Image 1 (tube, rainbow, N blue to C red):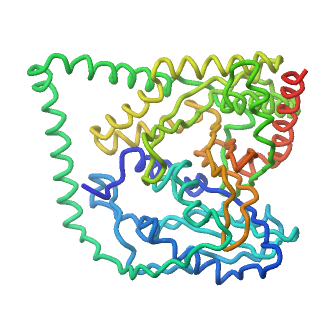
Image 2 (image 1 turned 90 degrees about the vertical axis):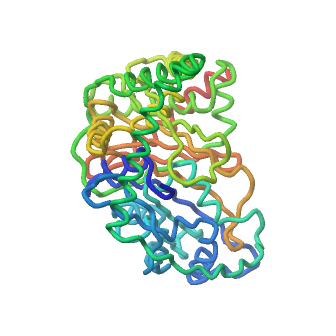
Image 3 (image 1 turned 180 degrees about the vertical axis):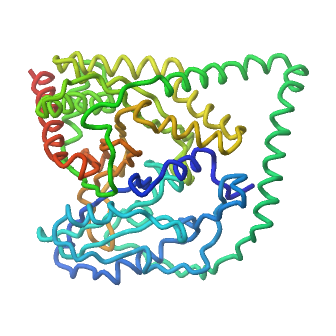
Length: 454
């Protein structure tokens, strides 16, 4: 039915617990407008409220199906209150604003998003930290939804109230019957496949190729690895975001002589930084099986939910030569793309919906295990043109990539205009020195930049 969470969306609910908060997000700084009064918190809150008509999901919550027979559905929140979702922070340090916002789990009895605003950071900037549950958006859509709050001009037109009122949510009996109906329809469509192939043998090739790709993607996903210190250990809900910013031109200059993409460079410098970090902790720098989200949207990021697939690369942290690290990840990513692994992963997730929901969750938890992957590294595109929020210019936006249980770190990068913003999201009690890792990745960029330049 319309409004039901997909198997992938539902999987992010299944792997969440009080220690592993499955929200995606961003932390942004804004310059105050020159020659004009800075907007007050109440004005910013009302500005955000006026834009929610552009993202109806932000006024909906999940409603479960009795007996867990199917994934939840989205229903309007009849008690929606903007003051539950847009909060004023008294933090004067950007780090404190972000860490306090990201260390709390989103409540499931209301729409699954929150924005925290500090209008008095000590450096004179305006700080905004936003998060939305991964079952609602992926990283691409999170950036797009964040941009709905922004404008390409400092003086946006006033948005007229949309007169929204919540629709009545269906009762438990209706949700149960709808789930049964949807399940019957899915099984009927699956049963028709052999007959369709008999009537049109040419379709067999069209079906077998995606199945082959899906099989390869699942085999790659489930290929076992060993938990790695210090990344794969029990975690609590406390979080810290380490961040730094570099010119986008630096990463392009590194990749150009080797035919490597910006994403390849991100993986290579992550490997170099992790190698230095692990050595500094007296840990052997071993290869790390790394999950790399890949966007499989055919159009823009306007559709909600998750339209991502995953590929897995072995981050060559054991390789001492920075050029070989870059060549290694470039070759791995090229091989995965040539083999259709991103499309195969998407097809596999589409096929998983035919499994019983309990089996879906077993498989999901297996994929999220530290025995399946050690680390997540994600490249999330952001706006390349100047953007403003009530006259305040967006200066930087650092990504928050969620971490599963027993995963103490994720590495994200977002492009804002002509800079790349790195966000290292860490379980702070398990990995209290993640700022050192940020410095190590920054130094790895310098190392490769020197080689590429000279």
